[in-house]
Length: 288
Image 1 (cartoon, one colour):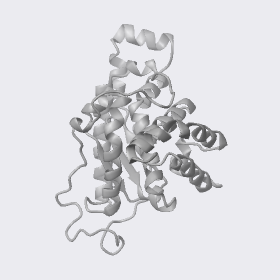
Image 2: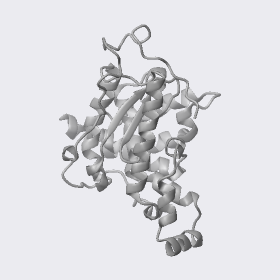
Image 3: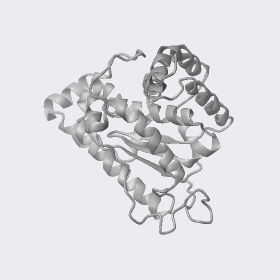
Image 4: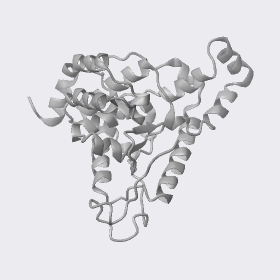
């Protein structure tokens, strides 16, 4: 994946207040499992059960592979001086949003209680963001700056990407990519899932560029909508976000839209589901 980067230094980044090297003493953004919600609560959106096919790929191996790939990506960005430092206001802003969403993650996946969440910002003109298995989140500056996202819209993007990880879409897609039906059954019988386990450990950049199915995108939209609403972000922002995405597409297809196609059906579905989570938003913000 070729990424156009921009350097973070005192001449080009007026928002950065770091006086010393931006890489000195850098810490990852981690939230302990204790910050997560104590137990599952009935969802307000209806997305059904997660794909059973995902169980053919060991979750722990995939999450380990994701952690390695994420670390490598950050090192590459750091080498290009494209990784935003801890003190960068946009980094702090993204992490503040994450702190409001993450406590509700375990409602959708109990494994999220043990995830070591991270949120980082990469200087790139790409309109892109993602959350890898295990809670490794990255935003590119392009999606924040070019779309001029509000806090509510940023929360919708983050919620959407977190939902892909929580619903374990990557696990299911990797399993599907190796075949279906008899082939998977044969692999499970002959190798005790070993082949798919090895695959999980060697997925490489697939975890960043993986394209999800239409059903995956529907799930991520709705679960992300609810996550953001529970975090106190206005549900209507889900609609304005995708209206901005549609305009950003134009004749070209930005990185985010190449794997997250927009259209009137998507916006209509969100509009239909916004009323279902309005109560959660009002409860979170104390509004009636």
